[in-house]
Length: 325
Image (cartoon, rainbow, N blue to C red; front, side, top):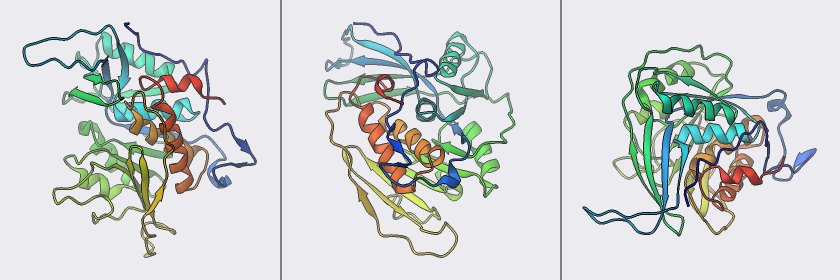
């Protein structure tokens, strides 16, 4: 069957996995010093129009296959993380490049419906980035992503944000924003390190928190734990395998010794669709860490719980309908 985008207006349906608060959250103590007011998050990077096809019948060269089971969604790591942060109750702004077209305007309207404000840095007559995604019956996916290098013609005032998350894409804007945020010790910089990209060392130099995939390795094969970068908190997500993490107890420049690398178990689930699970993890981590005031470890646990819930359903949004606040 053909599905339209599973659009969930969070202003009408606010739900949350973690409606388990009775003074202290079950997953760990809350730091009251970080929960006195709503934390504003800036999510910088890619926003795409995704077309999903659910099929096991991939065509050979010069052949086609048909399916009645397809859908469209807004995608991209930064966009999915921002939508997750907003859906859980956070104040999210997405900085990206969308161009100015019928598709672009429709995407901005949909993002606003999710509770995400949009800073569109390129308003030329250009279609947004798009991706074609094939999802097999076991939940695995194949992605072909079409990405412009946009010409930037807008600037925005970026004061008032408590943290910024970069997905290291859309570098025509992200490097300038990184330079601005990286000069303030009061602003926390979070890095979504999905794959090793150009200029990644500039992002690592400014980052306070890095959450990497297991595919994130430099040319020498080093993971984020082996790389020489002065980052206080590091973690690696590995799908259904335990999350690896390490942190500095007292801050990034105090000379304290790093804790040994630790593991956090991930709830085993029967995955229906893993699309966007990593992005959802990042948005949920930001919500737990900044908005709810959880410790680093507890925010990772919370993010793992949200991401595990998301893969039980088709597409990157369906899980939002089943959360309770």
